Length: 79
Image (tube, rainbow, N blue to C red):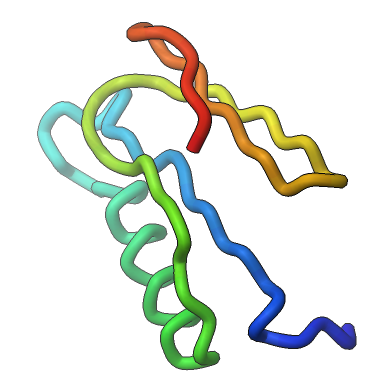
């Protein structure tokens, strides 16, 4: 779509095991691994991430600045 790879900022959040206590599917982990692989193959680096674990997350992004906040049971922080 015209973006220069050097200008792309990638921040990942999510992939928690919320409803899959027996690791039957581990969809979050599989999605995370595939996302990293696709980005790596395209020469795009990840600048920050908060992934995995067993805690839910909610994410807010300020599109103009690229700032991203994560909220979970532990509080709210900028990623």
